[in-house]
Every structure is written in C-alpha cells, then in structure tokens.
Amino acid sequence: MWIAPGSVLTAAHVVPEIGMIVEVGWHEHVLAGTVADRTPHVGPGSLWSFPDLAVVQVTDPPDHPCAWLCDVPPSGDLVVLGHSATLGEGLRLRAADARLGGWHDFGRGHLWQFTGLEVVPGMSGGPVLDLAVGAVCGIVTTTVGEGADRGGYFVPVEALRQLAPQAQRQRRRDLLTAHDRFHHRHGSWTQQRGAAVGCHVLPTEEAELLGLLAELTPTDPDELLSIYARCRADNRPPAILLTAHRDLFYALLDSAGPPARVVRSVLEMAHHLVADAPQTVRQELYDWLTAFAARHNQLSLLRTLRQVATVVDGTEGVVSVQIVPGNTQVQRFRLTVAVQDDAGGHQVLYQDPDAVHTLAEVMQTAGDQLRSALSWLAGNPLIEFVVPVELFDEPFDELAPTRPYLTVGRKYRTVLRDYDRQTDDLARYDWQQRWQAASTSPADIRWITCKENLTQVEFSAELEQRPYTSVIALTRQPTSYTPITDMLRVALESGLPIGLWRRGTCPEHDRAVEDMDCTGKRFHKASHPILVDGEISGLPEAVRQLRNRIAGQCPAPGDRDCHGVVLLYDDPTRAVRPVAPLRQPSYHPLETSS
Image (cartoon, rainbow, N blue to C red):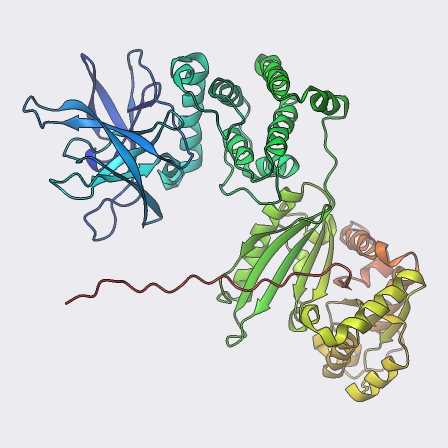
C-alpha cells in the first residue's frame, strides 16, 4: 500500500531485512524497492513481534495515488484488501467486507480483530479500510484460524510510532509529512470521504490543514506540549507523545471538552501557528483559519484573537513533585508529578505504580518530568517538592531539567512542602491559624540556634504559648544535629507553615569551637531581613533572587553566607492531593497446562 510518494507500508514478516532489495508490483510495473524500516522479530513466539510493520522505499516510482491513513481507533464496518491465489490464477487482488471484532493485547500494543471472512496466505500486509471515516486504519498481520471464516488481526496505523525505534520520531514525521503533502495536492481521496473528523473538521479541511502544517518548521515535543496546554479543550494531558504539528492537531480534536470548546481549541492552535508560519504558506493558513471560523460561526472569536498580541502570557500554576518512601522498603521511593493551572485544573502527568526506585533514580526521573510539566504550564509556575522531613536536606532546587547552567531554584520559585502534614487532620487547625496570622500581620519568627537543645516537650510547650508564631528558621540543616531535627518535627506538627535554613552544618560548633561569629550566626544575620521585609506571598520570589545573587560572579559576603538556602512554604489553603499508587491486577492465565 502506497502511503506517500515512493513509500510502501506492509507487514514486516513478508519482507527481508532492512537494506535488502525487493520487487514492488504496481499495475504493469515491476519496481525495485529497498526495505527502509522493519520491525525485528524477537522472542520465541511464532507470531511476529508487535507492530509487524515495514516500509519499502521505491527510488524512482511512477505516478501513483496514496492511501489516507487514520490514527483514530476503528469502528463498525471494514473492507480488507489483499492478494489471494484461491481461484488458481496466481496471486490476484481480493477485497472482502468484514466487521470489527474487538482487540487483543499483544507485545507493546494491541491488535484489532476483524470477523466475517477467511484470511488466506497472500493477504498479509494488505490495508484495512474503515468505512466510517473513509481511511485506512490498519495492516493485516495474521489469521485467527486457517480454513474458516473467523477473520484475522490487523496492526493499527498508530503503531507506526513504534516502527524503527532507533529513529522513530524523525522517520515517522518524514513519512507522514510526505503523506500530508500528497493529499494536500491531490484531493481525490479526500473528496470521496464523507465523514468529518470528530464532527468538527471536514475531510477537505483536514487534508488542507495537514498539508499546511507539513510545511511548518519541525519543533521539539516540549514546544508542542506548550501550545497544547494553551489551546486544550479540557485539563487532561495529551494521550500521545506530540512529535509533529499533526499530532498537536489530532490531540486537540481528541480533547473531551464540549464541541464548541474543541472548535475553539483548533482555532487557537491555527491562530498561534500563523505567526511563525513560513511566508509561502502563511496566507493559506490564515485563509484556512478564516474559512473554518466562518463555518462554525466563530468569526467574532477569531477577530478577538487577532486583535490581541500573538505572544501569550505564561500561565500561573503549580508543579507538584511528590517523593514518598515505601511502606516496607524505606530506601525505595515513589514519584508523582502533577500540575495545577490558574483555573484550578489538576492533572497527574507522571506516577510510579509503586515505591521501586532509589533516590538517585527518582531525582533523575523528576528532572526529566519537570521539563514536560514546565512546558505544560508554559509560564512561571511555583515548583513545590512535597516530601517527608527525612528528605528536607536533599538539593531538589539544584535540579537542572531545561539548561545545564540553570537550576529550577534559580529560574522558578521553588519550595518544600511537608508531605506528612497533608493528611494529618490533628495538625490542620493550628496549621491554618498560623498561616492566617502570617498573612495578616508581620511574621513571628522562631530562630533555632546552632546548639539549641530543647526537648520536644519543652519546645512544644513554648509553641503552645506562641499561637501566632508562623516561621521556624534554623541556622544549619535539620539533619546535622539531632535536637534540631526533633524541634523541627515539633514545629511542623504544631502547624508552623514556613521554614528557612541552609543545607550545611556549622563547622565551628561541629569542632566544639566557641565562635561569636559562626557560620550559623552569619546565615541568621544575612537571611533574617528576607523573612521580615515584605509579605509572605513574596518569600518564594525573594529566595529565588537570593539564589541568583549567590550564583553571580561577585556575590556580597552576606549572600555567600546563604549558600544552599532552603524555603519551606506550606500553604494550607491549597491542598496537595496525595495520589494512591495505581496497581494493575495480577495476571492469571485462564488456561492451565496439562
């Protein structure tokens, strides 16, 4: 099946290895083709490894049509095409009606089943046409049973994403770009399609838009995700990895919002892309957008979009990174990354099924996921690491997910939150009261000095007499001295929502040297103005600026004394959503071996 000029899509098990020459028959032509991509067969099974797809490239092809490919899951009536020698005249083209019969998990994906005909040798690699949308939805891979009308299985078109893993993103993008350009120039297939995509975009509109998007400069997935976040019709992340502009278009169409909001999403996407489109297609994309808006009675919305600046201000939001130890394996951790936008929408972007990773592995994954989360919000979010007190000294703010020279703590407002307190109902009243006190009056700060050693009972009694104290500040890191760790726990359980310290010990006191100007005292002196100047809402930004002054070429002595500064900023009015681990049911085969 031709899917782009010179490109044939077939089953992997009917062609030889990559680089081998094969013959491609087209009407009276016998063409030489080269196997460009092919799924390797691994494992002991007789059924070819998923996705059982191959691409053959013909160097000098004659003029030929191309099939329209569709990633949409199939539904209803199908037409299966292939070749058969049933009538005794050699392989001849065969077409048969079929019905969708469900799907079956297999390998890294799933195979769709069709019923109502017998799949015979020679039909493998043939296309499956979905009559509901008038497009090819898959490639025949195998029969269900020889000699009976039990149908067969086909690989969905979306499995092209798993073809040629070593270069799948670029290869798939090149193939589909050529496919979209062809159908933009040749409208014969599109004109015969009767179904609209998602009841929003007509087939002719779809082909024209995809052809124009194929001319845009390719961009990276994070930029595509950023555009999606601005234009989406609901608060869900896209179900697929966005590797090309066509993926962005289909992801917006698949949004589960109301029809009018989905139409608006497509309008906003096209409007956003017009500004950066090459001069050769800018006017065409502009005209497509105008015609699409007119058909949906959205010209007033389009005028509004065109009257404002094309550069969209960043979305204010929160990236929440939860790192929680396991119940039994405390040295293993579970990571959850979620985003909350300014409209209150909350979405989990990543979640480990259980606490199975080391802390180093979690830190690496957290950095990778932060990049996607920041693109999702496309702005200047607050980043919060929601962790138990045992992890308070970890350098979360020093992760660098976007640039090797730029940490999240310097680029974004980055704070800690206490994971254990999120579900502690006994601490909630004090927590809310102390936050309210800090929000309405100058903060009452309790500094804990380097060698302070109050017992938990003594410190708890002190805090009970100071119900408006809202800030706990330490002159060195919590884990450096056991009494300080114990006092910090009491402060958290007593509801103090704000904390400040530095990652580092006090060398002078560790050596039992009495020094009136120790490291801890210098940190106290340098950082205290941050806590007393301004409102508490400005603390995350103040600490971010402090980190940048410290990283500068010639930091002031006071700024140097604050190296490794950490801010606990735990707002009880915006609850964290601890997410229970997702667990798949264990697999128990129904068949038992005899």
